[in-house]
Length: 274
Image 1 (cartoon, helix red, strand yellow):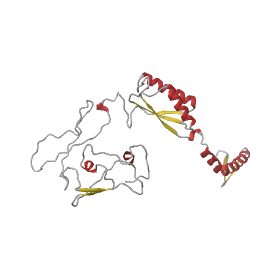
Image 2 (spheres, rainbow, N blue to C red):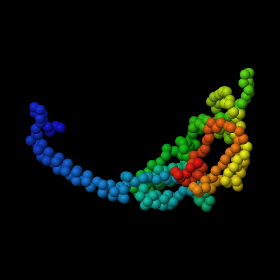
Image 3 (cartoon, helix red, strand yellow):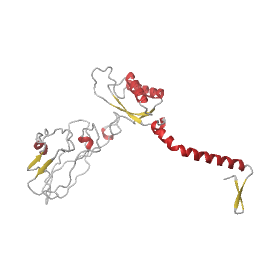
Image 4 (cartoon, one colour):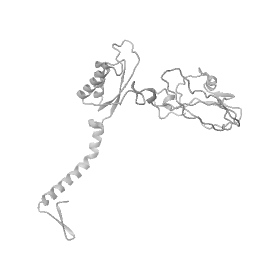
């Protein structure tokens, strides 16, 4: 420190440093006393967190069903619940019954409502954060043309007999008549067919289940109407399905959707098992 001066192998205080040394000692003692009380302060902070430690909340603004009055009531409820701010998500919406006017995303009226949200959050002492632009899981908007959009890689398969020259037209994956589709060829891959893989569904000869009332046969055959919903089963009686292929088969992979998809995204249960 600048207040210390080296003298031989030790040091001595400047005359003006004696008072500072005394103050430092008092400060250190005060810190020890505060530290001893810290656990109580920490507990009190958990019971009544300061504003800067409180969480923000997701705030959906969906086109068609928004109004200044409704936004004010929502934000007042957010503030009253103890949140420190909002993360605003805006997206387009369908036509809502008995709602007038139908204010749509990115319109002039919509921009006015965004300004109202900003004014109300300032009045209520809330932080206001918002996404960069509309989109459920990406950056998007009417200014993004198909050639500049995020891409989705899709594939089609065609089996041929090798050993000779082959000329053929490959099928377009997931054909669509939607005019905005922007198909572009990426690659053609040719490889030996894995043993036992003929490109068709692996269909069981028979099956057994404790839920025979459902159309399992249609589901396993890939029929378009072979879909159904299973109610959550009690832990003591889980739903089971046993497949019999009539011969030994090799399963290279089994693909299942995430738990939140299987539960229709209404509830995420960490204890759920497949």
